[in-house]
Image (cartoon, rainbow, N blue to C red; front, top):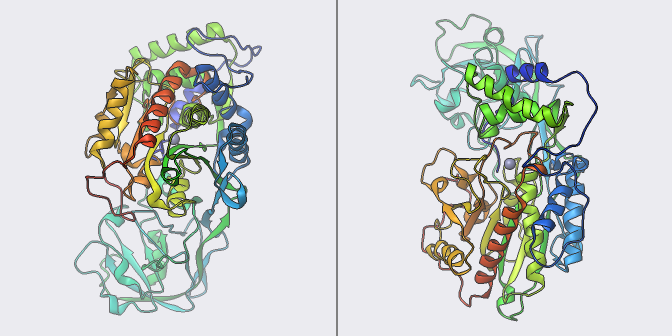
Amino acid sequence: VKITSRAALPAGALVLLAAMAPASALAQARTVPGEGPLKQAPRPTTAAITAADAMTHVYALADDSMMGREAGTRGNVMGTDYLARHARRIGLEPAGENGTFFQTIPLVRRAADPASSLTVDGATLAIGTDFIPLPSVEGVFTFAPRMAPANAPVVYGGQIGTSSMIAPDQVAGKVVVFTAPSFRWWSAAPLDRYAGAAGIAIATLDLTPPPLVEYLGSAQVELAADPAARPAAVPAGVMVTRAAAERLMGRPLEGLAVGTPGRTVSGTSARVETPAEHPARNVVAILRGTDPRLNQTYVALGSHNDHDGVAAQAVDHDSLRAFNRVLRPTGADGEPDSMTVEREARFRQELAALRGVRPAARRDSIFNGADDDASGSAALLEIAEQLAADRPKRSVLFVWHTAEEKGLLGSEYFTEHPPVPRDSIVAHLNMDMVGRGAPGDLQGGGPGYLQLVGSRRLSTQMGDLVEEINRAGNHGFTFDYANDANGHPDNIYCRSDHYNYARWGIPITFFTTGGHPDYHMLTDEPQYLDYQKLAKVSTFVADVTRAIANRDARLVVDKPKPDPYGECRQ
Ligand SMILES: [Zn+2]
């Protein structure tokens, strides 16, 4: 599941963690009661879906050697190589490019060009201190990637969001300086009326919180622009300090009339695009169905093969885990609770229990993503191996998506460039984070706990069928639909790959065992997963797959389809 905020470990917590870590001790690999081993040697897998097989795949995919499997890095190439190797062993058909299992997506890194420089009547404005080139943020604001004014006149455009903003016919070829009462200028007024301007300068750099400045100034990993897409309607933008805005105007901003001319500006401000260092790949495979007619249609199964790579700073694993279990029960999905005397006592108790088994600090900087989403990726391998031994009538399309954590990019690209006709995909079943759901992970957790999201959002029949399979097959799940509520603040329906199928009107179900304190943390490691549970979920999803694949008729879509290019709404 992709993260919603840039919530990182707060500085205060890092200080605390550093203080708690003992300076040195012999490394020990003893097992804490209730946890699995830290390492596990791979064993040959069987056609049956078993906890041992699932464990083999998760321990391989979430191993430190995979370096967090971040899309566009070597770790992601290694992880996708592993998946393709097993798809071949199981006997699936490659459905990627050039007869391979891989579909490479055009991942690029966009960042401010450090050579950006603007001059006002010959005096330089410095990138990073006087101005930052504004990126486009999907669904929030869009700017052209580059401005290159050559002695362009500057004009004061007024305060964003007021009725007295400058008329669009007065900005042609000019750089327009705007002020704003707060750093949230983008919610006040759209700037696409100013398409004819040479550039836009927004004087809010001093008002903007430093983490947001850092985010806007940092590199973003995105899909390369589709050359057919329409160009941005807004010229390139920069965020400037008030002092820089006053230099652009040649006078104080205080009391300035809209339309007041300023100085002239030259130079360039740009964001530049570089391809990812290593290919970011969806792994795509088909298990051909037995029915000569129905096997031209597909039940698609999905997980994501990527995670968050390596952290800039290592912390002690056990301290972080104890901290989050006490103070941050949903991991990076929420901010930490405030420290109280009682919580500190519990934190020290939790940590002391871990130190009793493993006295040494274990410095950790790898986002292993064992639950997110090595668990779903292992489930897909297990389901493929089971179905291959007894093929259903329709074909099954397995997609291990890349760059889910970058904003569902692998599934976005896949559903826009599918290797089979899009309308031959009759359903999509997504598994992202399916190895947890214990009582210690979230409220209501237990062996039969499973969250379902979206199962009735396009097809009532799909929702009914999932429940029917659970009953008929005695799977024993109790479904938690709480996260499927309209307008739920966690917005889970829009936060994993299934939405990219749903937007094209393909009925979906998202299966997940839900959040936990290790969500998007360095501590999402294989020893904390419940492999019986993972095998149980995999068996259930295999049964649902088989049921849909053996039906003569497609599931009926009886609910409105979304706009495929519109914003997702839960
Ligand atoms: Zn995630």
